[in-house]
Length: 118
Image 1 (cartoon, rainbow, N blue to C red):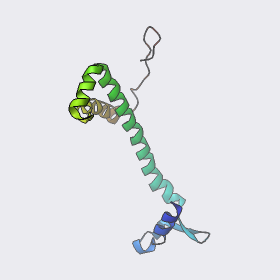
Image 2: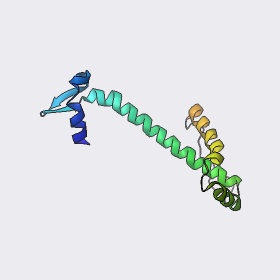
Image 3: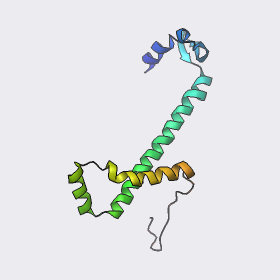
Image 4: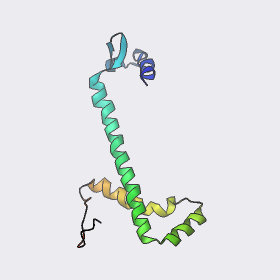
């Protein structure tokens, strides 16, 4: 990755991007200010998306499995060649809307009267 970064940064001036680059020990490197402001914010956004994407998928599958018997799931799998995109989509949409509107504010661990975490 370092070599690839070095390769691209050598052309910074050609693309009017010299403001984002500085010399460090004879090599062009991204300025810390650019890295923090631009790159890290994009990576943070991506990381947050990945967390929500994973949660959406896991919660959707949990709900789907609660509402369908194992036999129904096996039959759906056979019918659709193992693809559940259509069936699981409505479950995922519900969680995407939740996270878009509320983030994790309403996401809680609830214990029932038997002290089981739900």
